[in-house]
Image 1 (cartoon, rainbow, N blue to C red):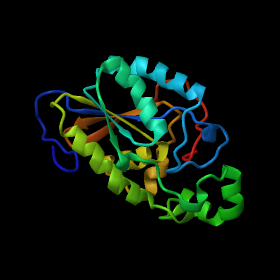
Image 2: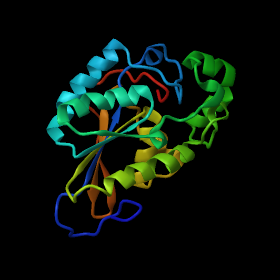
Image 3: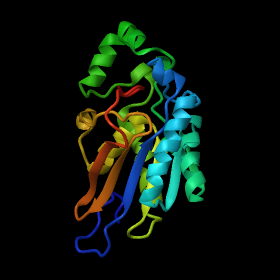
Length: 223
């Protein structure tokens, strides 16, 4: 596999698989408060979501688990680790987007105070939300982490990556080779739902998106 995730045509095996799993619900999700890199714990509902999802994901027979080191992601990953016996590798590079002064504000407060900046972000323009990271900078730090761990797998191995809505979206966009202005076309992930990437002859392919439940509202930084 190359640094871009490309594989050669005709290679034996079904190819590696990467499951990008969003953390469970937090109180800030419910309040529609932008979390970013703020370390917010799961609610009781979030823990229950993680346990339910883990019971499904264990049947995909993961070979490795890697997670953001923020508590909400690490706690979610721990539920799958308990069922699989796998250790969780924590990676700072998988944290959510740092959003500066936006962090801690509600969705309505962000629109009221930074409406033009918010609108530019939604149009796909490169925006440092709240003076924080660009989406491309998030992809620059997160995608290599995913590839590095995927490259350790056997040719048909499965990696579970537990992270955050915005980080997962930018990572998928980068691995699929999409232009950054189009990453917004990938809808947000519901708490504790996941997307699946698989290797194909021309690189990574999106096999599933926002899987794991009947459709529910997306609550969080990426709604």
